Image (cartoon, rainbow, N blue to C red):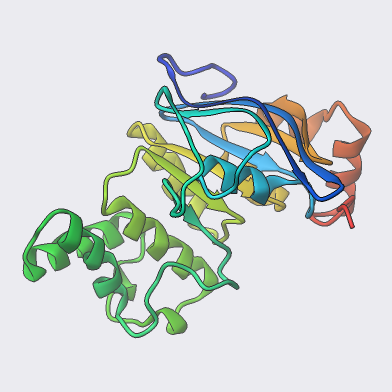
Length: 247
């Protein structure tokens, strides 16, 4: 979607009536969602809104109680390993190997999946790092990077396997929104779970505001950030990223 205009073509990801209970708490309530190729959608909301649970469900790592999740028209079933690539927050252990350089990290997936020589994989890895604006990080190790640099390197590593969809859980970094918009212009889709209004506004074509396990607003960034329709959204924007978080 660009400026509120829906992309043509079938939905890449479709959720209908997705619900999930954890103990006595209903963490997801009848979630409906559609994501098309070439679209960046931000699921924005306070901490505890259910965003990460929703993303784990889409990634096949969380069993839902009811509803359906389809990726490219195929119904998704829970599995032991994630189906899609999900970028975890920089403060958590992520997909980068600590004792390999950035270039080696990005080259690994290509060498394994594409059966490339080490030299070919390294060359392609450098191209991907340059593409996301992290070319000067190639010789660094993950612990030497800023959180924003780790974000870009993780995106480069994901791109090594030519995904059609990126799931990003609490993305960060000032350069990431630009990279995501460029990837969307080439036909890739990205779904972001974030509690950062500024990141969502910079990166997304469409905002889904989530609170209490429900999507309670759907709007373009301009509509959402200028005239939010619900009191929960207004309180969230007025109180910052943690405003209205569930305890």
